[in-house]
Amino acid sequence: MRTATISAAFVVACALSLEAQITATLNQLPNGADQVRIRNNSATSLVAFAVTVKQVPLSAFASNAPFVVYSDPLIEPASRPLQANEERVVMSDFFHDPSGRRHLFKEPIITAGILADGATTGDPVLLTRLMSRRSSMLQAVEMSLDILSDAGRRNIPRDQLIGQFKRFASSVSRWYLPPEQQVGRDVYQSIIGKLMDLPEEQVGSPFPPTNFVEEETALLNRQRVTLLESQPSLADAALIGR
Image (cartoon, rainbow, N blue to C red; front, top):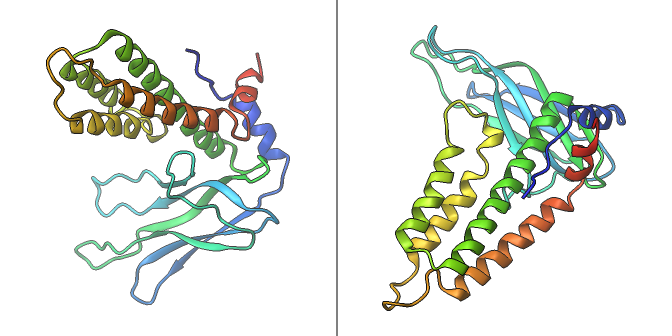
């Protein structure tokens, strides 16, 4: 099953179509901690966004890679949109090094987002990463659909089916993969947990049970449709530049 990919040209075009609608500030709290806040200055809700900020390494051997925070209900269902003119804390640091230094964050702060009407705003590279998460999630959903549908037809043993999902979860958990490509791990791990919780069936009974396959594939199909119908369109993005 073919999964949509994101064209950088598409994201750049979307980013240039609007002026920046998100502002971000770095503040120091009275307790010495650093805090990053974002504000939606547009007239519509910001349904998904990403924020990165540089960090001050606490030692010569510590990583100085920027911190990144994502919020996207299509990936994290508990995430909520940032309403028009709403401001929210997205990062807050309470760590300190042996010298007592607590300024872990530093400028610049980079933002990108997707508005309720499907328009995009912010840094083109960060937008690409935001969209890439949706593509990776779609891939995991489609792979899970294929595996469960096949298992329902072939009556695969429990351990074999769980092992298959574990291998997929492991394949997207490699240290060298960017976080955007690892979001599908939660899909696989959720199914693993559900398979392990299924009661033992009588000898000769089909596995996975028919009702389980029907319920899980219905859930995954709804998630697949939501991703495919999301804006900006993953399908349109894949066609740009061909």
